[in-house]
Image (cartoon, rainbow, N blue to C red; front, side):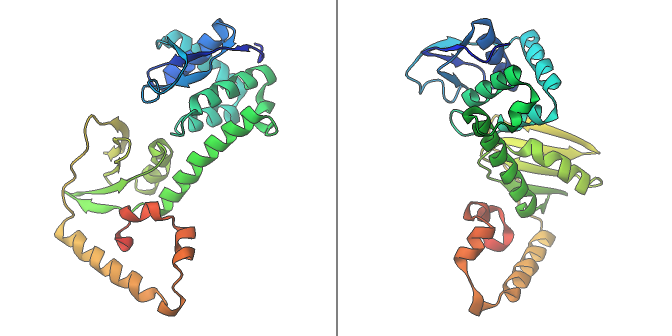
Length: 251
């Protein structure tokens, strides 16, 4: 497969699924072109190019997925993790990176002097960094007999949180609700599910026992602080303010 192809003034519009994205890669090779944009539904109305609708074909998606498997774990993880990023334009970035990898082989993941490789690496790092932060800052509450947490992430990080929390709490039933992307990680009876929601989820209030524990935790948190050494900027450096709304001690 050749990485070189002419850049068109056409935008590929697809359904936003990962299989649909792989079909965009397939179409790019079939037409021997690189699109001007690759647009999921939320971006499809914002471009200034002619559009081509790319329909999801499972056979085409499987062919491209098999090619990614042959390129190795590093390349595949960069694409799948980068796809969870919500930055505008990430779809075209990943399409160009996939083409680079098919042309150069697995070593393309290390070619950070190449703008397409560097941009794909930045997408993966942004998602991984947010997932690592949330592993530290998620606060579970007892709600209606099970553990529940609400998060407001920038990127769609639930798939990256699944492994950590399912192994951390193997005997618990819990859920993590992504209130930004309307998705839920649900773990019940030793089985994990990632669910997409059609409407915002209404969570039951914390139990009375939970509220007592929260009050104790806040008191403990406040008591530990040395008031004379309070450093608001330092606190925001270690725990960015956008996470505070979901942390008991910061409310």
